[in-house]
Amino acid sequence: MVAGWQLRNAGLAIAGAILLAGCFPTQIYPTLQQRSISLRQGDLEAHGIAFVTPSAATGQEEEKQAVALVFAEVMQKARTSVRVVPLAETLGAVNKAGLADAYSRMYIDYRDTGLLNREILRQVGKVAGARYLAQIKVQGFGQSSKERWGTLGFRIVETRSAGVRLFFQIWDSSDGTVAWEAAQEFHYSYDTVSEEPLSLPKVVGRAAADLVAKLP
Image 1 (tube, rainbow, N blue to C red):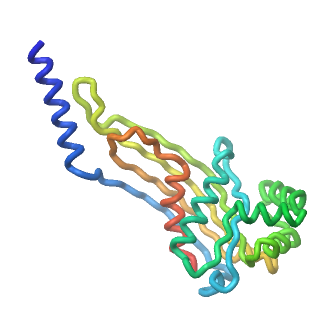
Image 2 (image 1 turned 30 degrees about the vertical axis):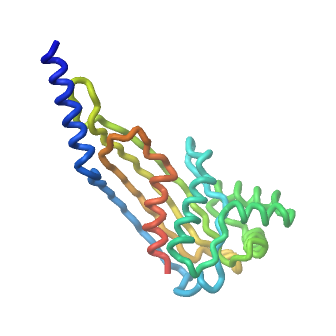
Image 3 (image 1 turned 45 degrees about the horizontal axis):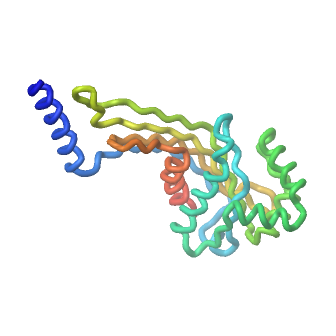
């Protein structure tokens, strides 16, 4: 019995030592491809950018607004000289202007064709007060966890992993063209003793920082 308690205490002591050792290493594996078509340096500062409703793969639909919010926050912090219109403000302006039905049709058509209607796009840009419109597509998201080391039935360290695939386009509402686009596959992994999961918004936030850094 005494030996059992000694082993238990030894295990807890090891766990405490791991906690006191500091942060666990984080492993990030981003793969990013980007293409600038007509967007040039200074364009965003001059004309602003508004976020429209993202699209998402099956199973991630409820996260769409959170994804747009994270992207807007990242851009606001990274590009302080750019007027960034978050999704909620864009939707409010669209609804106030009586464009809800047209906006809905544009969104449904985009899911089927990858095309944003030029006239509706122009109207959305006008009421949002930004020439450029940001559209995010969440193409996939997965997460997993695995016990990395334990003793006497106690989990000491758990490896949490998540991966996300994003497609990010910036449309020019003045002529209905794509001004800039990027595709990113982002894998995030770290060791932790916390119960906190790797949520989609958290992983998207790291991916968004990489994408925003590539903008002209």
